Every structure is written in C-alpha cells, then in structure tokens.
Image (cartoon, rainbow, N blue to C red; front, side, top):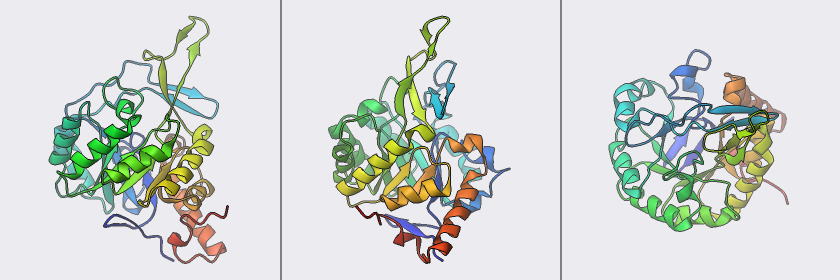
Length: 301
C-alpha cells in the first residue's frame, strides 16, 4: 500500500497535513502525536516582525465549529528561525511555513529569509480574515494573488502554495491567478467570515466584529470549493475545512485534493490525525486500493 503523494518536486510520505494556526509549531502536540508520522506540518502563520495579535476574546464556540479572531499572533520570522526551526528540523516530515505580509515586499523578504534547509515549502497566507492589513484584502483580488505569487517564486527555491479564501464569489478565478503566478499548489479553504453577538450587552463578541468560522459547519462548502478549484487548475489542491474523520478526508481526496490538512478538530481530539491516517488505510484495504493516488480526483459526476 502506498500513501505517498507529490506536490511540485516534493514527495510526502502520506497526505495527512496539519493546518496552519491549529498546531502551533508542533511542540504543543508532540506529547500526543508522533510527528514523524505526519505527511507535513503547516506551521503557524509568520509575519516579518513579531505580532501580538488581536485583543481577547479570540475564540467563540458555535454549535458545529468555532469563530476565531487570533490575528496572526506569532514571534516573527527571525524568532521562528531562532526558537522554533531547530525543533522542527529534527522531525522526519515536511515543514510548510505559512507566511503573511502587509505588503508584497514583506512577503518577498520573509520568503528570502526562509530559503534555507529545514523549510520545504511556503504557504502564502493571502486569506486571513482577522488582520486589517494584507490577509484577505490580497486574497479577494486576483491581480494581487498573481503578483505576490510571482514575486515570491522569483526569490525562493521552495515549493510555493497559495492559501485561498472562500469569501469570494468564484474560487476558480483566484485559483487560476495563483497558478498563473507560478504557484506549485493551492490550499483551501481558509475560514469563512462570520460573527457572534452578546445578547445582554447587544455588542459583537469580537472587537473586529467579524471573525473566521471553521469546523464541521464549513465542510460542505469547503468540498465544493476544492472541487471547483481542481477543475480550474492543473496544479495540486490541498483541501481543508471541517475534516474530523477518515471519511471526511477521503471525500476531499475524491473531489480532487492531493492532500488534506486537519485544523479545528485538533483542538477536540489531539490524536485525530493518526486516527484519520489509520482510517484511510482501512478504507484502502477494504476497497482494494493499493495507491492513494487512485482515490485523488476520482469523483464520478
């Protein structure tokens, strides 16, 4: 049985990734999960300088997911290189670094700093809904996606993945802009903007009013967007959004995802990635699938 998948010139041991922003820099989960068994770790989003993030509250639970407004709290790229990368380099898996900039020049500078051993790929975060500068403001403009991707590709030897926002009318346009800019893959979906209100004060829960919704509630939407994006581009698609079981992950692969990233469910079940990986193996055994690539984009419409 082969679980190996390829994105660009990188081979991943299996298609189970952890989504940026839900797994820290790996240390937090190392007591629960053998990190060497993951296909890849997509680390917490990095900005050029350290960022404190948004004021609390940052998380609000909904009936089938969470709203978050963390605001890209992180130690900055230099802090990552000094304090986090040495630990990550000891893990036998691929390290994908999620990066975010307020300007195109910041994306370029961060990418240059990360063009080093131990970093295997970059994920361009042009889709965070919880920051005032950059983030989703780039992700809802196909010209910006094209330009950022092209400029970053020009300064890095790493695989470049563009993380897309679902907060657009036609995801195909944005996926194609990333591909035209030279992206090696696209990942989707980031969170969907939503809000919550305190009925006693009649004020929004979050200081920014809106926050990003993730979890099981968004899975049907994410599936649709992955399916549509795959039809628009020839590069691989990494699917994410509400995955909490092997069956969920297999659904994403059937509609076109080369790999899947587990996000919110890590907070509920810290060992879910391993459960999902074993569930995929069981499915393959039961359905006489010898190579995971036989499942990818196998949907019958």
